[in-house]
Image (cartoon, rainbow, N blue to C red; front, side, top):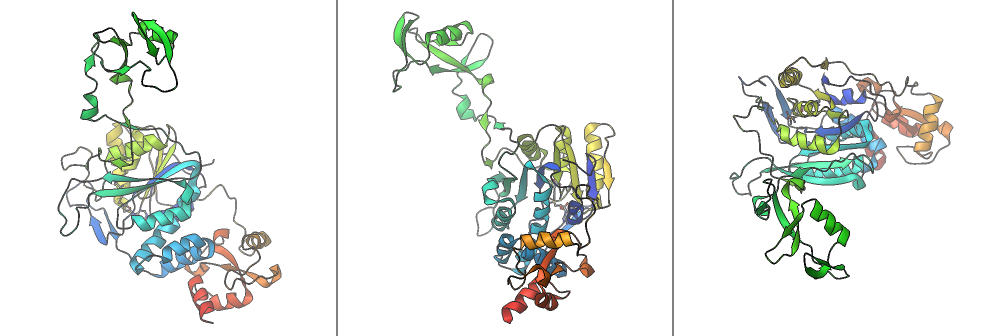
Length: 448
Ligand SMILES: C[S@@+](CC[C@H](N)C(=O)[O-])C[C@H]1O[C@@H](n2cnc3c(N)ncnc32)[C@H](O)[C@@H]1O
């Protein structure tokens, strides 16, 4: 697929319009660590590398939310139901903010791509519903629990020490490279032998006595038994030095520790510690995540040369990890400090000048050609099919000439002529709605 950005680009600005300018199916992996609706405002300590970086994490319903909600209401009914399940206006506002962005992420992710949404228990239950509505419940892969800090006392509740990472694919065949962790000390004790080259191994039973359904009867080393493997395999084990003999001469199979990959990574991650105050990677950015966390995600869900995208990139942890692993990367952050940190961190990391592009403009999509005027006949035909000939307000069926094209978000408040922002309304509903939002129209229709 075509991309309309250079590999290794950092954009400064709100990620919504920037993502809207990115071509569809242009990235392989998305990791996002957005504000969590924690009801706090974050700022980096003065004197740290990241000083000057700050972002707000408090939410209220305002006009922009209402316009976004109109779009969701008109085009994404399942998502709309999820948002209305939120308990407070602040939660609802946060979910609308996330939902419109996740819709864009779904569009720009390749069919083989995956997305990891990093959040915490404040909103993870709602975000999972939003992800189900946007990516499809069948594409949910894991809810990863990451132990992000050591135990501490929270008064009156259990100490809250984990974050949640929601992992979804876009389609049925996502890129996946299984990752492994080291074995526990308990398991390692089983490798109690060492061969002449100093390699640790454990010995495995080669007799088939305890197996139901057969085995291979023959004599080996003067012992006649039913064995698990055919005679020829036993000979191969012998030639390659893989047989270990007990005191009475019974052969057993050597399983070398070096040949074992480790324990496949499970969905609870307790082996990646938080960044400590002395860590080299620490830049003092509020909410900075450890490189090891991103390293695991990027290795698991992308290959060299793939494009990794972080729309809330903060101090560039994802981008630095991707760069080290020979992936291309795109980052967006609303804070200008983030751009400075990306350039600084990657240059320091690589020890040379990297080809980083820093942009503040909105990219122009190159995969859709010029957008037709909103009232072009092809738009009407498309929308008529999409809505099955029904008015998107009252739901009544009409012949095409009695339906009018409406901007869901009015042009006066930034709505575009893109088909995603258009719907068909009957003349009556269109008059009621005027320049107001879809929510106003629906509440009026419900009252009448
Ligand atoms: C939780 S932090 C990300 C930290 C990052 N994972 C790291 O390791 O540094 C969230 C980031 O989102 C950025 N942000 C908030 N709203 C944004 C928006 N609308 N567009 C782009 N970035 C935004 C903030 O400036 C902040 O840097």
